[in-house]
Image (cartoon, rainbow, N blue to C red; front, side, top):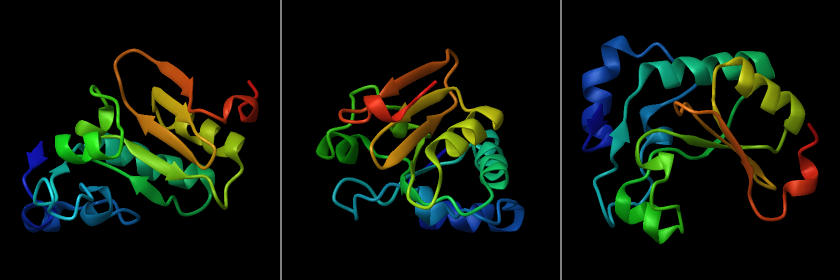
Length: 142
């Protein structure tokens, strides 16, 4: 469900928020009001998977990018059909072994996995996909 602003989303979800390690603010669009009012796409199954991934990884997950409005997605060079325009997350690799984090993402049910030099993209697309961002090809050993 798309909320037009993380503030309105936070108010409606406050009583039922069951994901202690993540917040609406960190998953909402970060365009700073240039294109939207901080849109937030709520998906309970996605958040459940993030919590499961965090537990398996054994430590905090820092979200570099969550939902993006269309304007912000274009401004940061996102793909026109980016999953970030609904719900996806780029998780900082710093502080984690990339293979442990990847295994945790797979175990949590993420099916879209993209490896960058400093982040792991996760989403829950219908058809599994894996890809590399430029410069990271040699970093992901199967």
